[in-house]
Length: 164
Ligand SMILES: [Mg+2]
Image (tube, rainbow, N blue to C red; front, side, top):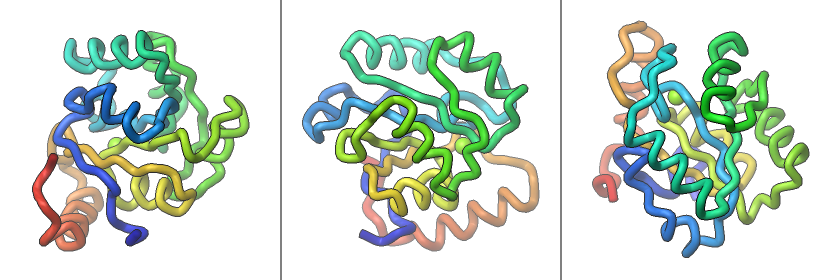
């Protein structure tokens, strides 16, 4: 497994069926927020994403939010969704992931991480050896650094098969 390759790719998080997790023995999800569940720095969340989150809950999939963004951005979001948030992620460092696993007593083999960035979400998950699932970002960022990262991501992902 290439450390910078997502194990699975989907276009949007709400396009991932419950059966995908079931078939892979996954019942815990570590979710990125910005550009995975919502637009960057936005508190808005689409109907499709809300419906997907409800469906996961109904099917007994546990979820936790792990974001590199500031707590004042993440907390209201987590409260609104009623999904626990573990602050200070520092992805791709492992401390945030490990904190989630420890706090909820989740087994690595049953846990997947979903996010839109190769250098945080995917790298971190692969380092920890939990399932890594990459989604396309909701929109293109305007910051130069983020754009630069996206260019690198495209180079690394080039040649991979298209989104499932
Ligand atoms: Mg993100």
